[in-house]
Length: 282
Image 1 (cartoon, helix red, strand yellow):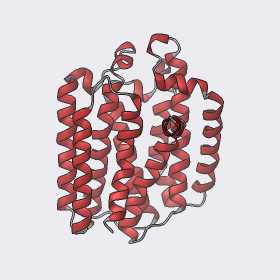
Image 2 (cartoon, helix red, strand yellow):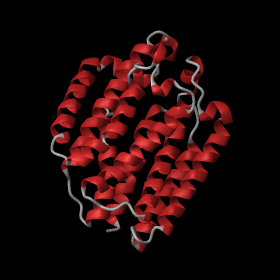
Image 3 (cartoon, one colour):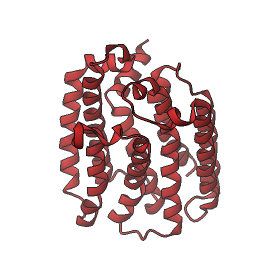
Image 4 (cartoon, helix red, strand yellow):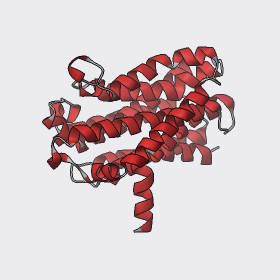
């Protein structure tokens, strides 16, 4: 019970997903620098993730309050932690701003596009007070693109690393990985998306075909690891492929009846798992 409350507290305060974001960019920093270390860019990613996800949850909660029947367990917890999440939003903002101005100018400029997309994803600034995530299909592609860009492209710009074929393959691998583990969240949110008229891949393909799509994409990501020998050593390749096998199994287990922690802790946790496997494998 104590462990469950601890897990819920780090998940629903968005600390877990923020740590996951840092762990993902840490992989790229390790692969291009050859050592594990925390850079100011990691602080920026942590702060921005905490800010964007806290903002998203608070706005999402206000929309779902209109339809009380859709208030899931996670939103009940978030609703009770409104002030705490607001504090984390301000904390994330402060960290992001402090770190942003320590980056190179080229990196700051490169952050503009993912930054604008992230803001438009959560804030209703489009016509008819829509967010980018409210536009059918588009949200999962935005998530994958922004995460892939920030995790791979931004560190390369900061460290003036030429984006060659191996790094482009790394970008494709991480982008597809994020895309695949985001699909189950659309399965989880099926009723909410139906209610608000947001068409998603599970609504168009059905749950089973969506799971198969996710598994195919994970297999492609694993193949990208195998073929990217300029980036990964043999032991790192074996470790990451093993991680992708675990993700394949989690995708197989996905259904609408799973507890929210299966998604928000388990599937998001596969990002941290990947980093841990890379760390262990050297």
